[in-house]
Image (cartoon, rainbow, N blue to C red):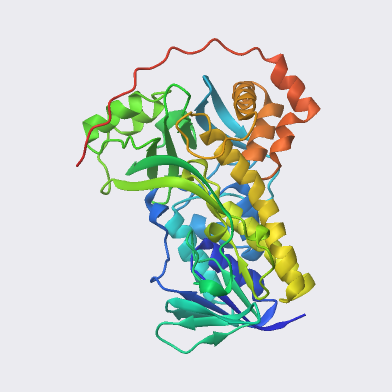
Length: 443
């Protein structure tokens, strides 16, 4: 069933992918974005890497995207897509490589800005996608269904379907016509600080990336990811309002005070840009699937459904998986009541895994605010054992990477073959607790 017009609100990764996915389901797709291109979110200055699940969706939509990213200087993940050399410190152990199932696509590592530039360029080539640079001021609602949007600077745009990819607070003001969905929040108040530095071939003993995860004793983390232009994106995140420093000497000391000091070796060189800061107060999930009655003509995707703690790198890929599922449902149901019933439930199922992964890890700390899942401490203790086993066992490594890249559900970590291997590895003695480095005020 081909629709007449679909309006997509939001020009970020979710909105661009939605426009491309749905361009084959309608005569016209109108993408409305209020910000100049690329429409980058506030956290765009932090280190970014696309998970394999998201890269696969983008490859389905734009088969030459990875090649174009590499042509523009993105860093390759290595010659073997099933093994990525790394220095990944977690739970008192260090993984030297990440094991992946055969993904069928060469991954390019780069900034979020470059990804969005190339995705937008590809969407602009689609003949039935039209861009509108404007602000959506409301929805056209009649008989409980959405029939289009109103714009600040132009006439209203009628549509068979409105896809809201407008961000955490939504891009389509629905007013009193549609009730607000129930919302879950998990408060962590993480302060991020990010830097760009030169990337050299000998860095990290040849590892493609490095990560130091937060621990119960050290509620701070760090990551280094390659990007275009032979640069490292280096970022730190500290829970509960403890912002990291920006002075070079203090930054090196701060990096050395993490659970593993490896990132300090990258910070003995000049910063290539001003340090970037970003504060993430709380994870938020809007339960559109729990509305008392469906809303025909309207579907939310991406951050309009769930915004995750950026520390886990799931936002873009979760949004892409949601959009892929929406495309399948529009092909099956069109844009009527059947879609309004099916889409929020299917999207909620997609969101379940990354939400459980991110919020579960956040509940490592008593200070985390929100409804604590029953038995979460036991789950987190088991996951710590998984991480230690993954450092020495390829099967466990593959299972954990598959789950964290949204290629497998969290239950895969409890499958009997994985469980047996995890339990076979005795927990290592606890590493000496590092004395936290006192954050330096930059006010």
